[in-house]
Image (tube, rainbow, N blue to C red):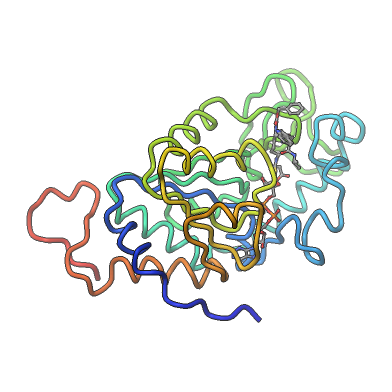
Length: 268
Ligand code: BV8
């Protein structure tokens, strides 16, 4: 039973309120409370049932395109049934409270955007999107008939999920935005990730080297725990709303991006 965490440390609350640029790195744990299984959870994790090498690599798709397509179709349906949870909502709220913000996610479920987050960088793509496996062009419509995977209307090649598979490079613009955020942020929140998949797992060390405060939010320990400046052990859906509320509720004026110094913006 995940105990309610203690109140966030006051020095962290102060750092968050004073931050000019807050960056957030999320993993599957932030969607766990939405019923989307994580990867590594021993029982419920996707990787406890399926071998990533057999499903999330270009060679797996080449070997058995139908198996890979069906697996992603199953996950796409699961994500379609899920809804953002209070962790997603709190991050959308945080974005509205700080002068500069970016959310770097390893998740392909699109739940951050559905919760109202705007500045989201999808490091590993988005499972609700599909593209031609040869030309790379995204397609909006495709029929999920049993002759899976469907083929590209232009060149006849198989369509594939618009995600980054293992042994595939991340999109340049996403990687650039991530490295820029890690080097310029004052605070980096690392939420719900086991910090084992690279290059995403290298971002906290970059931020720390540049003097940012690194905060881990996770019920368990990870390879990052020992290096983090603050560790909040608990479920993101409980810890994040508490942290945002502690930083901005009842404490008078809060900054609001685009806030132009008129009548003070009072938190609701
Ligand atoms: C690449 C999309 C060049 C698809 C994904 C350096 C060292 C070692 C290996 C490498 C290296 N550099 C590159 C590699 C290889 C590889 C890699 O990192 N391998 C790992 C396994 C060691 N990286 C790559 O292949 C990358 N590409 O490097 O290209 C190249 C070219 C040729 C050959 C080599 C390299 C591409 C990586 C992206 C792969 N695509 N996803 C899909 O989704 O199907 S990765 C996928 O798995 C996710 O996106 C995510 O990144 C990762 C899962 O991690 P998490 O999200 O953290 O989830 P996990 O379940 O592990 O953990 C959940 C956490 O949440 C836990 O800590 C748990 O305690 C916590 N939690 C649970 N409940 C809650 C919670 N937290 C808060 N609240 C809760 N309620």
